[in-house]
Amino acid sequence: EMVTTIADCIIGTLERALASGVQFDGCGMWEDMCYSSGPLLSPKHFKQYLVPHYRRITDLLHKHGVDVVWLDCDGDISLLVPMWLDAGVNCMFPLEVGTWRADPIKYRREYGKDLLIMGGFDKHLLQGNKAQIEAEVQRLAPLVDEGGFIGFCDHRVPPDVPLENYLFYLSKVRDIWGHGVNLPPMQC
Image 1 (cartoon, helix red, strand yellow):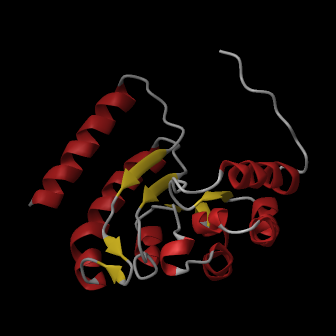
Image 2 (image 1 turned 60 degrees about the horizontal axis):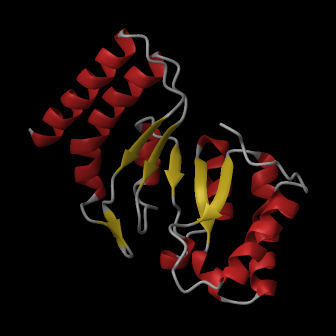
């Protein structure tokens, strides 16, 4: 009942917004339902109780031209990704590398471009040395070039990351992923 009520509320809110002329570029969801060893509920119950309601929401969004539905879930999401994709949720964030060794390249091989990825850069490497940082930026460069991957730290940058390392990371991202593009800050 609770899941149905929440989904009904989301759908009702979306319908009102869409009827008033709002056009969404994408949709974000937050579902922190996994921890380091997997989901907090069984995949069987996830499929039975949650997937149909995700589908109701994503069907409405897709009907109105929203083709990116991203989901924020920490922890090991590997058992749930196929069901989220089946339910119309096609982008995962933050894809935690440092917590449970998720690998965006492995996910790309397994799901192709059906799965869009945001994050996927091990934030803990920023506490290491510059060679490690540059190697990881280089390793992920093919995903950036393929598209469907917005690489950045796999969650918030830890407070003990040296500023010098973070600035080095940003410069390597700009040089390697951005092919040297240096856009000026936007003026509002």
